[in-house]
Amino acid sequence: MCGIIGVYNSPEAVRFAIKGLFAEQHRGQESCGIATSNGNDICYKKGHGLVKDFFTDSVVENLKGHIAIGHVRYPTKGGKTINNSSPHVLKTLSGLSYALVSNGDVVNYKEIRNMLEKKNVLFESENDGELLLKFIVYYIEKENYSIVNAIKKLFKDVKGAYSTLLITKNEMFLFRDVYAVRPLCYCKTEEGSFVIASESVALDIVNPVWKKEVGAGAIIQFSENKDVLHPIDISEFRSSKYEKHCIFEHIYFSRPDSVVFGEKVFDVRKKIGAFLAKDEPDVDLVVPVPDSAIFFALGYAKEINKPFELGLIRNHYVGRTFIKPEQTVRDESVNQKFNVLPGVFKDKKVLLIDDSVVRGTTLKKIVLLIKKAGAKEVHVRLGCPPIKFPCFYGIDTPYKNKLIANNKNLEEIKEALNVDSLGYLDINDLDKSVKKPNHYCKACFTGKYPIESDFL
Ligand code: SF4
Image (cartoon, rainbow, N blue to C red; front, side, top):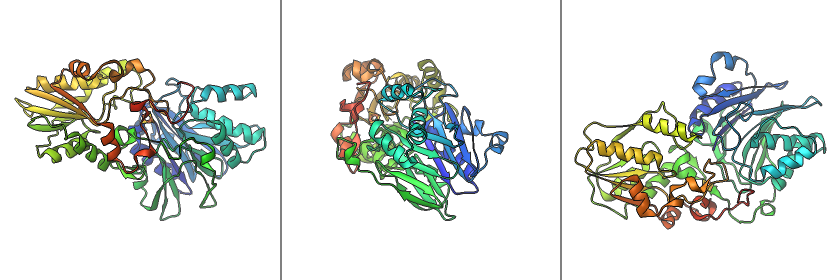
């Protein structure tokens, strides 16, 4: 999971790109970067850390142009190095320049990289973004493809999830994989600029005239101040007649104020909360694990007519634990991240709601915190079914043995978390929480992967 932003035809492209990345900071915190073009040349800056820390005045000063693309990185492939960070930029011997940012994972990475290396294409990273860029540029430079035809070739050969932005000196292209796994939307502003983003919250900052979700398998060219859709026949490239959006975007990844895959994220979460309340223990208050479980808890508390209490306070200056890539860093973050409201839990029967449990590390510590604060009972409800399978489409859960629900049954998980009762969302209720359940990937719950992968 990463966040991307693109701005075309705006004198404020760099400022909008930074603001957009700031709105998408929750999608990745390891590194960030922006590439710009002023019509003559592409320049870029990328580095480790948060958007607010990296983009100092002296960094921003070097970024000029009316076109900008940006990226916040959550590493799935390749270590924490600058080479693995985005944007990836390429200046060819023929004098052309390209820059690319992408969100998702290529599942036949090795096959495509081997193919390109045999054609003497050199790589500097293990990152999918570099692979996508070098694939496209290879076909432009060596096989005389147009950019659009090179992207069409990419759709044919490169499997996986990729919501992507590519710029040249004068143009911007967006393309989205045929299953539309990761979100991507765009808008036009009153001034005639286009802004493209992973999440709609990043579009809200520019006062859009209209906003749209980008279609599955879309290639859109932004050129001479207009957007041109280059249609492809997606049925040629995918086995399912439906898109396979990541359902986890609604459960955890996306901001609640975003509209993702045509649905308001907070609405989906409230519906999930109400479904969870079917299984109602006798409790005094309903408490969310902030921030992503807040709307589940609101839905739940409303359904059972019990008090909703923000009993846990999250320190927002510590990163999201789920997206910290290394376990040691993750453990330290959990300890610093939450505290309890004094007196709220004393002698109470607490219904604690979290979005999901992946490894169990965070939740176990939170339960302990609440018990230490005097709770009589802690009952846990989770906003999704048990996560039993890894994700290969942009989320860092590669090994089954790290997933608590893959190794333990419900009773064992309840014991491991040391809670009085434990309940997961039923998968049928998850389906009822979204408008088009067939249009979603749910492989981490079902093991039914929509895109064939090298890793399966
Ligand atoms: S496997 Fe799970 S996390 Fe990965 S894309 Fe599918 S629903 Fe999303």
